[in-house]
Amino acid sequence: MTFSHLASRLDNIAPFHVMELAKMAAALEQQGRHIIHMGIGEPDFTAAPLVIEAAAKAMADGKMQYTSATGLPALRAAISGHYKQVYGLDIAPGRIVVTAGASAALLLACAALVEKGSEVLMPDPSYPCNRHFVAAFDGRAKMIASGPAERFQLSDQMVREHWGEDTRGVLLASPSNPTGTSILHGELGKIIATVRAKGGFSIVDEIYQGLSYDEAPFSALSLGDDIIVINSFSKYFNMTGWRLGWLVLPEQLVAPIEKLAQNLFICPSSIAQHAALACFEADSLALYEERKNEFKRRRDYLVPALVELGFKVPVIPDGAFYVYADCSALSDDADRLVKDILNQVGVSMVSGLDFGPHTAQTYIRLSYATSMDNLQEAVRRLGQFFNKK
Image (cartoon, rainbow, N blue to C red):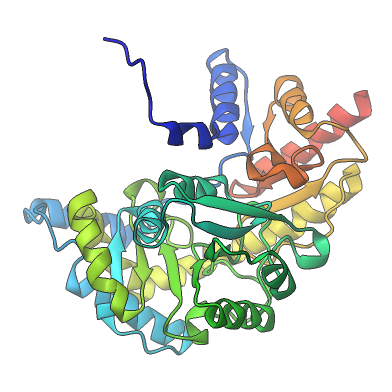
């Protein structure tokens, strides 16, 4: 059977080059090469022991049926308690919707808010799937070039200058993938106030918020009850493949999102939800903080090492586990550079190609979600590569 006609919206969905590089790296590994993976943003840590035990117990106890589309009440309450403990915020459990990963959360938010022709502002560079979620509902992501002066984020001035007749809102990420940079609290407050005054929506992706290193963590939820926040168990809680995340919503959006979730997903994984309850145990939280400190140690090693190699790191990442490095002094083609490095010395990284045209040719993203031994070996190999040139 052949398909002669595909939905035109597919024309607005670009290939995910990060995954293509991962396939290239896997092919080299199959040939017997040792590859150091600094491409995909996945913690090298696995789920905490208590989480694994809770998953096994849930299966042994037969807790594998559908849950409510909005998630287990106990898990929604636990997430609410986490906001109180970490951020000092009183978030009603009823405003929290558990989702099948942050991707499902973004999909649901865009399904509820984006219409044909809607324009959503986001920075260039930003996580590529964010613009594709908008495109999936026939909206249009307006990518606004952002550089080191703005921490690769949107500023309030940018939002004011680029807000147009079809603009419906902003989609932000703090800390961000690919840059690891956060929007400063005062600037984020200005952006949200501007969007609010224009009657628009503010979606803030906070999946890396737990991995903030240099300042006291804060959530955009502290800036008002009308903000939509995305979060996930993948990064800080080290549960990538479990596919579990959540939304915090204004009260009036809970029922519409629940209706969508019922139809599109039925519910998130019941086993993952029962397991995630153990994330909030004291022993688990202590372990996550130890791992967070290890990520910070890796960052503090990698950034100066890259500078020594000839890269520029104009903004020190304050969160997540990425360094966004300017390679323009070393190459005029970032995509070709990362492929040459992979093939010649076996270090897998990604160019700025996925993240928007503004930095596509001049920046590479490196993930330090791998061991310190691997990072040190990667730096040694990069030195070997550049000394050969």
